[in-house]
Length: 151
Image (cartoon, rainbow, N blue to C red; front, side, top):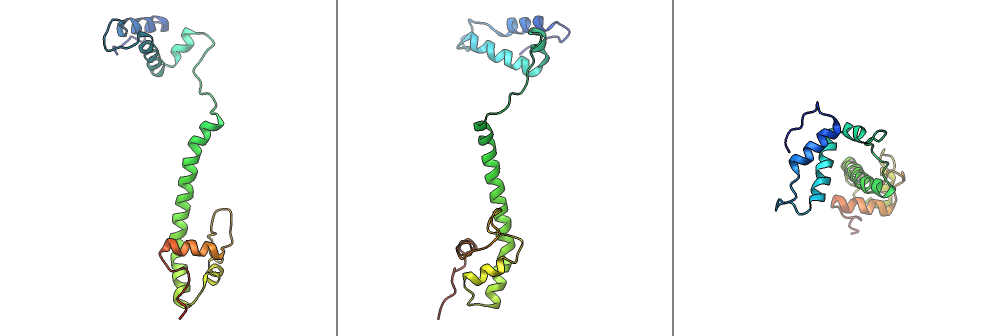
C-alpha cells in the first residue's frame, strides 16, 4: 500500500488509497469488491478516526462478546489453570505420600487420605477431603502401587 498524506481529509484519503490500490483488471485480484473491503479494513485499522470523519456520529467500538465467544476463550484458560493447579498439587503431595509410605509401609489408601487431609491441598479446588479413590488416582499418577503388597 502506498503512503497517503494524513493532512488530506478522511474522504480524500480513502478515495486516494482506493484509486492507488484497486485495479479491477489486475489478474491477481479475484474480486475487486473483496479487495476493496480488505483495503478499507486495513485503512481503518491504521486510522480508526477515519470512520468518524466518513460517517459522523459513528465510531469503531468493540462489541460485547457472545457467550459462545467467551466460552471459546475461557475454556482453554480454565483448563490450563486446572492443569497447573494439579501439577503443583502432585509435586507438593509426593513428599507427603513418600513420608507416609516410609513411616508405615503397609499404609492403605484410607490412611494416606487421612494424612493428605492434613495438607493445604484438597483433591480439587472445590473439594477439600481426600477419599480412597482420590488417593488411588494420585498414587497411580505418581507411579506407585495403590495398595502395599499384603505378604
